[in-house]
Amino acid sequence: MRRERILTIDDDPDILDVLDLTLSENYEVIQALNAEDGLKLVRAKSPNLIICDYVMPGMNGKEFCKTLKKDILLQHIPVIMLTGKGEVRDMVVGIEAGADDYIVKPFEPDALLARIRMILRRTVRSLDANPLTYLPGNSTITEELQALIDSDQLFAVGYADLDKFKIYNDKYGFEKGDEVIRETARLLIKYVHQYAGPDAFIGHIGGDDFVFIADNKIIENICQDVVAAFDQISPTFYSQKDREAGYIVGQDRQGQEIRTGLLSISIGIVSNSSQKITHVGQISEIAADLKKFAKSQEKSNFVRDKRRL
Image (cartoon, rainbow, N blue to C red; front, side, top):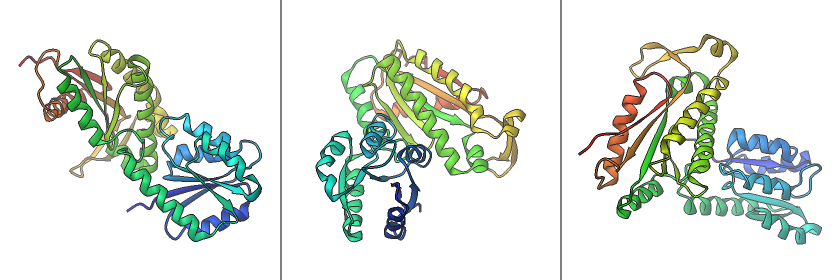
């Protein structure tokens, strides 16, 4: 079982040492000496919580928070700001920039641990979100799909997942696999919002499976752009050797050795334009059939259900 991960950012190595001693018994701790490196670690390691100094050379704590909260995949990560006694008044600015709490240096370790536990509990309770992408999870997805059915309006739902992901994950490891999933989420967010607007729904079912909702007339445009963009970035997930070979060798779910090409993406489009959909399970069943067919094509693609019932 993975421990919750905390990123600490401070330009004082002694403070980082104290934080590591305080936190490492209960949490996985990663550290950065400045906000710029901290942002790189956030994107690479996806921490559950960030502890950031308010006053640092270069990008300060306020600027770090503002940058973090602009990223839809990172904006839900809670931030505790560390501040000196004379800077408490400035913390109002930090809170307004997006910090969730602050604690004054020098701090009591037990007080900091209590704050961390409280914020992590609150975050889990308040977000039905995938911990990797912070996109809405299964409960919210079900509610959104049921609301679509109840509205009795024309709709389309895209179900997307990655092909050959298990073998990639086995060879390159979970951290690289997580990076692929986050980049897939970014592509979906970019093109769904570009065509359907910033309020369009995108959910993360789990693993490499996603769902999104869009108007029936534009959903194919979204899929075309997602497929093209994914094929463009897919080679960048590999080493130069594997990229040049165009394949990797791994084992399938039965333990048989197989050679697989580079990662691709398959999307199934379910719509009530040609049939009546009465329950959420029906959408999932149709999507599963569509994705199975799409995956058989051995390349990134999308398929639409055209059955008439």
